[in-house]
Length: 316
Image 1 (cartoon, rainbow, N blue to C red):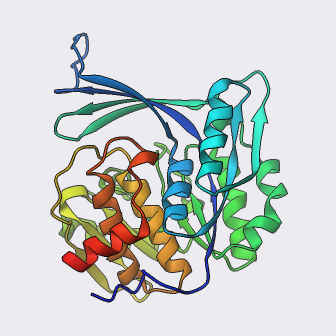
Image 2: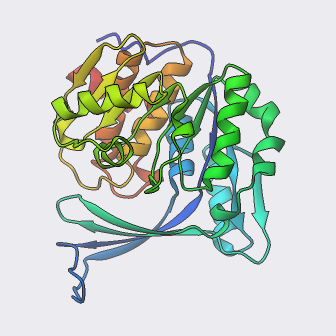
């Protein structure tokens, strides 16, 4: 298969504004019930944070990536920034918050691959509007801006406005979705929630592709030009700018850990759109990236390389 996103075009520029976490991951046969104590199989400390994960995902697609965010003045912060540098990511827009811990995520992973995550924002909660405004020139020079909601919403808002002002394509992964969702955030080029986030934002049930189609149309009516709902083993549903809907089935893979599948999807989606592919082509390629990420443990370590995603697409 000649995969459109496996391109030899110029290296696209992607800016990511978001969270940078250290993930503390434990594995257990099943997640405990309230008040229950279980013995786990293993423990790992790995680099994570939705923003940083998506930055690594895009970098492994061979994009030129700049990360905007904050870390604490602790050992984790130093290690996290060094990890991004090893991925050839520009860290010049990452600031250190004195007297603050870096962001942490405690992640329980069942043998089935399903997970439960508790996030302690730390320095991520201190990303300010000024941090975003100071990076306006960087955002203006990008092909794509990737955003999530693990930094303050009031800092995400100006990023969307800057991108609109400079005609930079913006992808919002609205996770975690706040109970009182600010609908202004949906005025972006692409909104890409999972089924639970789509249900919270639209107030509609999203349990199957038919319901996801209705939710996608609702998201577009609320301001998004394109809506994509990711649904794990049910694939994803895309409603493009013309209103045409596509259901893209999931790739049949053996799932080990779904922690970062959505971030792999977002990073690959951003890459494909940055090199000029259609939304449908980009979503197909991103689905393959998300599937590959779910076959590997951890967050950033699970992010696939461009050639691996292209190979999975070729084999399908």
